[in-house]
Amino acid sequence: MNSPPITVREARPEEGPRLLELICALAEYEKLDPPDQAARQRLLNDIFGPRPRLGALLVFAGELAVGYALILETYSSFLALPTLYLEDIFVLSDYRGVHAGSALFRAVVAEAKKRGCGRVDWVVLDWNRLAQDFYLRYGAKHLNDWQCWRLNQQDMDRVLGVN
Image (cartoon, rainbow, N blue to C red; front, side, top):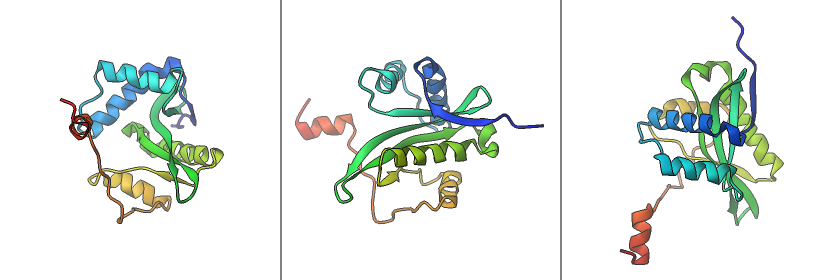
């Protein structure tokens, strides 16, 4: 049986519902709560609205969107170049053996080059060995000397003295 052709392109507004389905599939895979209805609306607005905060790429097997990547720019003051930050990359498990993930990852790297970025950064859950092995095959480096830190909304309010 022949596999359908794999293609990657920027997501279109009318594909928002499918993109949200894929985001929820990632949440399920990572054993996290999916975005609620209000968060889904914010996501669509932040991707497709008048002032996009992030971009979305979809990978297709034939006509079916089977994965996505969310990207945004940060900046490296030491390189004096933008960094493309890969917020999410996910491919449905049934399509991981047909190079959909590779095509999507390469599209992210190509976008970074097109934008003149000095690097691509992302994080991987410590238990996700499948993802770690995927990135290692591309020569990605695990940064042992940098730790991810976070303030959530309640922490930000506490810092700012907001009740």
